[in-house]
Amino acid sequence: MAELNPPATPIDSSPDIGERIHQLAARLFPICRSLSGNGVRETLAILQEQFPLRMHEVPTGTQVLDWTVPREWNIRDAYVEDEEGNRVIDFRSNNLHVVGYSVPVDRWVTLAELQEHVYSLEGQPDAIPYVTSYYQERWGFCMAHNKRLQLREGKYRVRVDSDLKDGHLTYGECIIPGREDREVFLSTYICHPSMANNELSGPVVSSFIAQWLLSQPRRYTYRIIFIPETIGAITYLSRHRSHLLEKVVVGFNLSCIGDERAYSYVASRYGNTLADKIASNVLKLRAPDFKKYSFLFRGSDERQYCSPGVDLPLVTLCRSKFGMYPEYHTSLDNLELVTPAGLRGGYEMVRECIEAVENNRTYRMTCYGEPQLGKRGLYPTLSTRTSGASVDTMMNFIAYADGTNDLVDISSIIGTPVGELVPIAARLIEAGLLEETSPRPLPATPREC
Image (cartoon, rainbow, N blue to C red; front, side, top):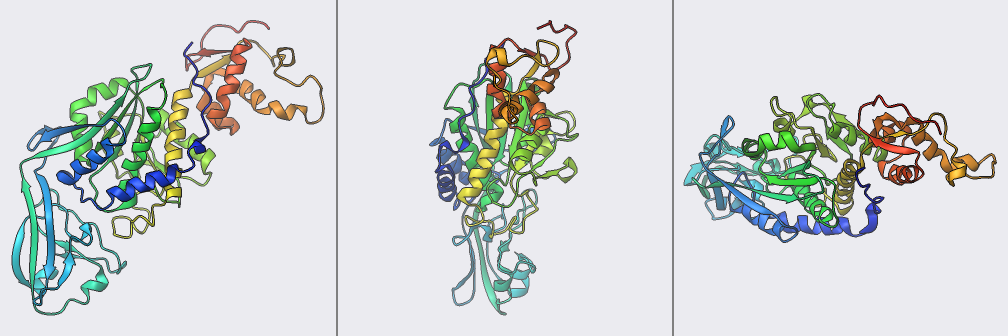
């Protein structure tokens, strides 16, 4: 029989975990990240200080499935300056001020021409929008709409000091060996600049999950990757698809996991994988008002991992889902929106999902009828009106341990977290009343007690 993990240590065993994750987020927040470039490498180098992380680089022009690795983009400065030399838009004050992947430009333009290259949000007049142009060469700037309305007629100098040339797409990978070579796959993306929930929260939570996973031996092998969204997932699949299809038991894509407003997940394509079952179980017990989004509302890298021909058993875990909170893709997605409490909640959610994966097994009772627990020291020997309450969870567990339900199934049926069922299973096994079996009913007949 496979070794049972010890009961989960309390999630709050590190009271300052949220603060520590937030501090890492604050350190990474100012870095300008994109699909490629030095900002990505700087981010990965800082994460390497937290846990073993290996960087991989894929050259520009490499064919990856139906895509091609784009040119590398690096930016040093960008601004719009009026005739008096005042910077009315300044990349150095907020890296969202420039359209991602803007090509170099340095010239004077009229206000009318400038307006053709400026993006703002009338409905959120104090927010700087996040705009990119990865696969069509252009230059542009973003600014708060209220500031845009203050622009006066005249000439403006527009300057983008950037490079767009052959280079590399860079991603990070951490593989933590377990007792089994079957894998749990975790993916998050590092291509967004200064936005805290989307997508800085995913990498910083993943960093602390990696540290926790390294703290003790594990049943499964863990594969954790830090990639640019879309093109990074496609690149990774082009290199590892066969291996992932063979080895991955369950996968979680982590995105927008640091605010305090909600818990949610985006289902796999058909919503019927172990990842779906575990996400639903954990979130139902953690936050009964959680939101489940069907694959029709996809938008992160579940698009790639659950695509036809891939179909990994994977869901995307979020707090407030991408695109569903007002600060999304704006400068309002900042370190005030993403809080220590929010990050801690995201960390706990991911950790509980992993603990459920680690401890999930299928059991069946070894005898017919209700077992005599009292003679085995598992039931109070004095019968009162309340004596049975102390073993209600055990009795409920026994009622559904029929060889067809795994621990996650039983947890969902009786409303008790998987972590609380693990020691119950261990006691019943020790008493000779429970045995591990395959997830499907077996033809063997239980013995008489």
